[in-house]
Image (tube, rainbow, N blue to C red; front, side):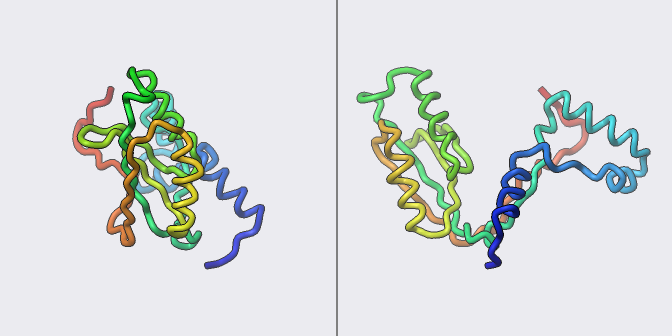
Length: 166
């Protein structure tokens, strides 16, 4: 793995926050065979409508030594801590504030939450679980699954025909 310096690290962090990357309207216009100004106005319209949330950089986690993906499921202890919907939403929000957690999902079934974490190794994950997740409190059970090979990882949404919007 190549070492990155402090300015490179800061640059990568900014690019991931969104709105720092911009689409290449000239390239898009060429591929779509429409004027650049039309592409620009369509992008602005989609941004205004909230369909495009941001433009971000996708980093190669293997090159940054963040290879294993850990999926963890959490069962909340309702009797001790959480008695209503607002408290459950607060729990999810508190998980979402942990920078090491990439995704937080409230789910149905035997588990209350599914979270996704990328860590450099089991030791880093153990630290995240013990020092950042468990201190939130109210956790009845935390179970983890490590994925060593990812066959597909995308945030692209395939759109077809007249795609309805909300």
